[in-house]
Image (tube, rainbow, N blue to C red; front, side, top):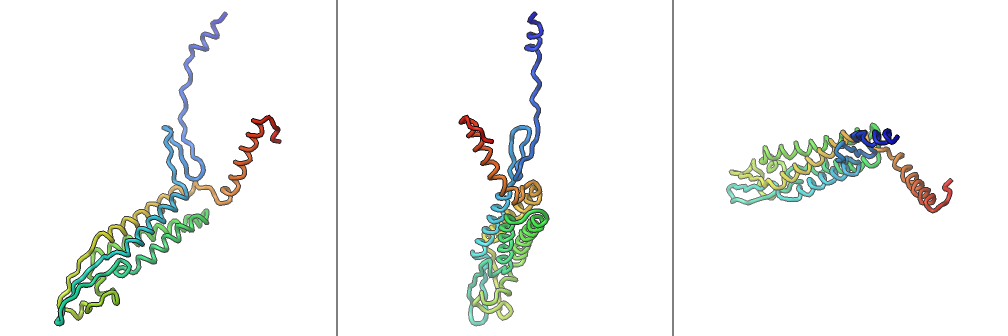
Length: 219
């Protein structure tokens, strides 16, 4: 008479189904339990960090030159912001765009993220142009150099200090990476309105559960 129970006990349990679930704020769970988080906050921090690295790199010496003429020779140096003046405003624009990502949603978020991405690419282009032709910084630095201009000099020896430009490129790549992640995962981010209402609801569910555990009627 106990045969049905034995059959039920011998019946193999179904294998657990692996699912991939996407949650709010860019959190995606895979079948192996791994979680990839591309949240709005992390994208903003990446872009701000990259812009800050680029801005900091412009304060170091990028180009040095020894200019000689009939009166003698003198050595001059130029920082990144002097050798490539466009770096600072573009980096500031990237940082401002990253901050703006915390305030906008929908199509405006996509536009701002694209602008930040373009700023990162422009930073790379400006730095690359300086590395390819550092002598242009000597002729275009103006008041940054106290020595005679190369046109009036008999000889000009220009050297590049690569640490600053490399740091600028690294910062620009961080900006580009953050913006690219934002474009790819931004569609899964909750809107500002959803974030504002989710907090009280979660708090209410927890409060009701605690009241029910204490024997009270949460309704």
